[in-house]
Image (cartoon, rainbow, N blue to C red):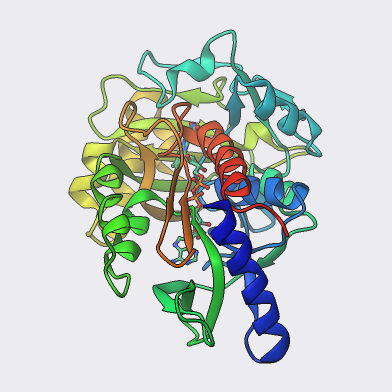
Length: 372
Ligand SMILES: Cc1cc2nc3c(=O)[nH]c(=O)nc-3n(C[C@H](O)[C@H](O)[C@H](O)COP(=O)(O)OP(=O)(O)OC[C@H]3O[C@@H](n4cnc5c(N)ncnc54)[C@H](O)[C@@H]3O)c2cc1C
């Protein structure tokens, strides 16, 4: 396989020189979440020139921080945590990551956190005061990232001027089409599946990947951000896991991560079953219910926020145990290569799994398609 990639590469570069209009990218990475960024960073360190595309207006994906009247609020992943040396070294090297170690330091309730192992002694937890997305911005430094670039189609196309070489045509929502020998997909598994089912023309190597991706089960999470009036007494807990509630899985005292004198902000995350049942309802139909439910274990004050926002994560977390053990790589006749990484493609799962799957995919892509 190495030989055909090298030939394809040579041909592509010669053609690109001849046809000004045809730019053939080295690797196109779809998704600037933690998996896509760790992948691109590792490729870059290996001497490659990845182009990262994301449909959003910022990097980080589900490692998401929103500014609520200037105050950062983590409304997806609440804390960076992991246990592998590789991931922890990266976290410690990121600016601000040590701001609050071991957050949440005080817990209420006896429910089970979505990643119970994050509270094991081997796991380290970091809550950046600037919000978890600062870690994504750190990973993105020096990378070629194009935001607001939604990928809508993938096509296996013959390289102009060649009889057998094939490349990927990546179709963007803007109508632009990019060409690359290697495409790496790092969106949540259901989005990867949706894109691959539309690949034109259908290909047996691709069809073989689909049943594997279908094994990854991704759960939704409805989320409410509630900010409280100045003077509201601060709760003594930083995370609450109300075991009895059929509605709420976790309440995070988000402002306890912030520097200075932040306003009191809670982030309420619904249970997967409740989220699934209300996923297509309007936010008004579930937002108030989540706030009311939060008052049951913590008191009347929870009912009286002065600002409320909600977010619907259709694909929030991978159901524990449904992750594949490693990223996927497929080679196609004619030399095109497809890689797939993300939190569903590493046994560690969650944010650490996303990071490690990107690193693992970079190694495999560089092995299968050596630099020129
Ligand atoms: C509410 C919530 C709580 C969580 N709690 C935890 C936790 O406690 N511990 C833990 O480890 N993990 C937790 N997670 C999960 C964790 O955030 C994810 O596992 C991790 O961030 C996934 O990273 P990723 O790069 O694989 O995917 P993503 O972060 O989803 O990145 C994929 C990127 O692809 C982009 N994209 C999608 N489709 C397209 C397209 N067609 N074209 C271009 N770009 C596209 C998206 O905009 C996104 O930026 C939580 C997530 C949520 C939502």
